[in-house]
Length: 267
Ligand SMILES: Nc1ncnc2c1ncn2[C@@H]1O[C@H](COP(=O)(O)OP(=O)(O)OP(=O)(O)O)[C@@H](O)[C@H]1O
Ligand SMILES: [Mg+2]
Image 1 (spheres, helix red, strand yellow):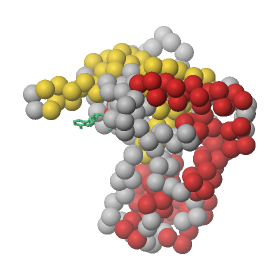
Image 2: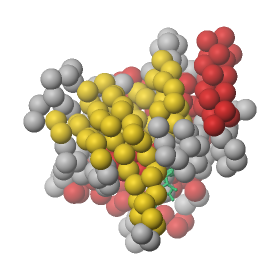
Image 3: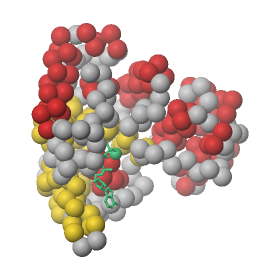
Image 4: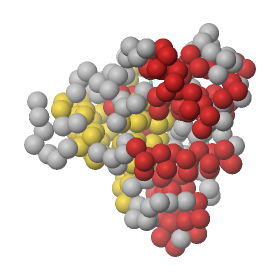
């Protein structure tokens, strides 16, 4: 089935999701409509438990919506698994595989010959400062290093759509800032579409074209902000009056609807 609309990389139409707790349905998401254009970078911010990871699971095809539709590339896409690169909130590294073998997994699954897969992966290890750790096992790495391996593995999946669930959550501020700037440069270079979930409002603004603020569970979109800051961007922009204004607006939306639990960075 083809959509008559312009080519949206992702389109959610009136999506809802409920889970069952015993016999009681728990409504966690929606109703929600969301469109992400090809090569756009959008961020989702919202309180803990409002359904952000669930939303990414729905787009990736790990979960199916209770009602509504998920479209990818102008097609209703009930079979979405494997069509997107997804970095989960937990790093999901396989403990019995070395760092290199973990990173090679997406290439292996696509049947790329090992020699070629290694040749593709190794330059990324250099760029991520992980070259010395290719033969280490995940348990031998720090939390931040594990996250970088998971990020690297997601990039190697080489899909036009990247779903990133708090990719820099466990990193120290310096590593985090340098990886954010690096992701920006990479995005500008590779023209991929990115949907980023983050609790960090500054991160959302530095990286994105649009930021969506979600309500507490069941998560719905309470506000969409267009980030009209020029590119290329850098952290120097955090003092730009437009940046300060947008940040205040997002924080006001989050505070208005949140009681406890929300780790608001950059406040
Ligand atoms: N498979 C599942 N079965 C039952 N309940 C679930 C399942 N997955 C998520 N939930 C519930 O759905 C709600 C939303 O969870 P989700 O992980 O999407 O939130 P989140 O916005 O990503 O939160 P956080 O910011 O803390 O990561 C939570 O109440 C959670 O307990
Ligand atoms: Mg989550």
